[in-house]
Image (tube, rainbow, N blue to C red):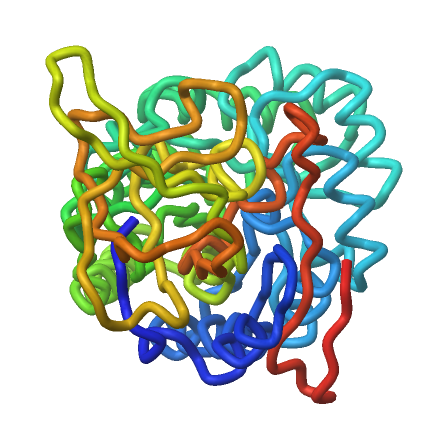
Length: 402
């Protein structure tokens, strides 16, 4: 976590944080919509399926649905929530390759007709419990260049993808597409270049088997822009280059396919992370000695790994200290309030310069935490309840607590 100025915030978000008198998560709904619209301009014609696990909040789902987006759902529960929020079922797919027979049947009953897969065993289950469904096969990637590589649990090698889709055809399913995921918070354009090469290989092999898919799902991985690494250095993804590589890759895949080919993308944190912030408060700024006698400051906040900042073991969130823009600062370890040693940055990672005059109860704004703040929070570990949320900059000019 590193100190920044309020200039990094949208005006509505800064105003909502300043007005808050207690801890809460604030979303800039208009900012989320703007990020979606920018994405559509950068990747014309691509269908957006929001990875709803990043922010399973009804108002976010409804706002994105009004902009024409759908959802990438990973369970029947997510499907149900998306439908309640107003997402048309035709704009929802089941993007999780891991699902039980009951999960498949429940999603099919809810109207889902497009499913991800990566194994012939899953294909066999889909044929029984989702007869006639469309399937797209996830091709594995290495995850290099991403903060979270996601390279082990999902996907199959290119050669196996051909076998899986052939099995789908033989089982009476529709072999509709291919997908990849280059890793969450992907920091390079090269990752998508490599994924396109693998997808092209599969398209050629499918063509030789007489299988012609109708779409390619480019998955998630598009980065947020406001993070810091674990030592406090800005993570500065080359977003323009990433978009250019994706556009070039789409052209190449259409050329290889030799016919109409649609594209889908599943952004999560890219849409919501930078448009959510937490108003927290200082529990205590302390000074303690380490085992070797070195003096060390610790800043304990009212939120941490278990109530809003789950990803603090992989990155630092930016901090604003309203009312403390001047005065001396001290390097501190930043930690959450719980009685768990994982609820902190380690000594080996970057210390955060914080105002020396901080007192218990002073407000702190934690920026760029709109992704996973709600979905990863516990139900009340150590008695610290999940944060309520509110809105800034809604189109009707109102806010709504949740």
